[in-house]
Length: 166
Image (cartoon, rainbow, N blue to C red):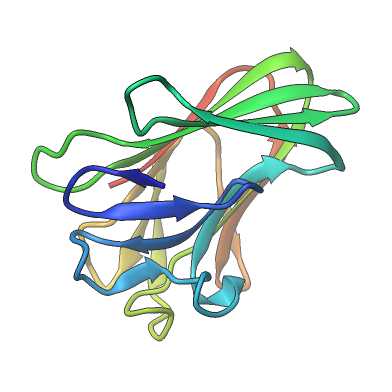
């Protein structure tokens, strides 16, 4: 679980946020795969190839979740948290290479109102914004592409990558 005292997200061992209501606990979920399937909304970041082992821990005294994936070609750490709230919630996900080179895959399926509404997506210079206009916006350090009502990316990790959903 990651949270900011106003809302919380549930992160699976495989690196997928499968439940998140924005902007508050009692808002409609934009990621509701926990109640249905991945098509009801999720945000997964994980190695593209076979995973040998997964280790998870929270940083001491925080809700900063670290998931370390070990693969044949290397290891990578996925760091998940929600930023202290100013006005709107912000989910921050950082991918850090710790050994070797690991091809990562990202899949973002935003669905409003518990998976019942599929938004249009407008690409911006450094991410995307779902339409109808909500306050949600994804910023990413890598180029993204959309296909079949999903947004994704698959690339080798050459340096740290940051993704945030506002």
